Length: 378
Image (tube, helix red, strand yellow):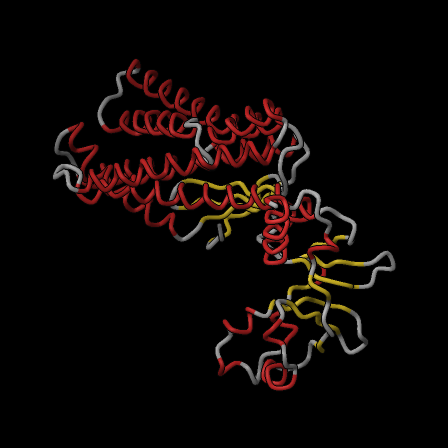
């Protein structure tokens, strides 16, 4: 999930928000200010309700951030790095740099999220109770009351045993502990997630035709569509990783092609480097012949034609320092795990002397998985 706005770092982890947060923030604030609070506390000063709604909406996203930070803290405690935390339309995502090494760690990382939301629900309920005991009433108490309810709902929803929800991760950990096969456990949890997502889609479409819900009935459908898509992607990844478990990087990689100069323009590359369109990546070197980056060919297709004469190849290439590195004898499933944790960046394949001999991409892994799957099927 891309970060549109970087908020800073917490414990060294980049924290940001996606543009879609503005959508849910605006809808939440409007619903609270114009519907929820007036219905509960009667007609009152409109600015007061809007102020309370804005405060509640901000604290809701702070709660989501706390939920994801809890995942990050426990992941680090279990030896897994955290690349970033991003808040977006349907909540938050803590992007980890790898998978848990055992079912116990997998369970702890997953379970701490709902536990944090449940603790926050209790804290806000306590604030509401203390305020009521002190004689405070009205919309001032409405803010912690709503936050207690929404965090409780968040905790309950997340423990549903359907990937990619936290409950799906917990289910995966349990299945992994039972069958000693992480990939098989992930596939089963993802299939449950797909089924649950489809149920939400159907429920949302049905609610759309209920007059009292209208457009709001489409929210479950949108959430179900997201869950189904995410679960399908997880299932595909787990299946691929299972299929290539015995395949080496050297067997799956694409051989490295002749490098191009980084100061070459895109126009020159397209005109004189045929058949560039038949390959996925091109090594990029400096004037001294030192490897400086790797160009993914599909980036060329996204570059406007008007910019071809002035754009240098080096400006489109991934710097070497940002790329992953593997040896030919490494197993593809471990390389795939690192690639998925790095937004699908290609992997440079080096021989024992440190010379580039190939490149491993997600497309290479897919092809290797297909070959291995067909071979296993006979």
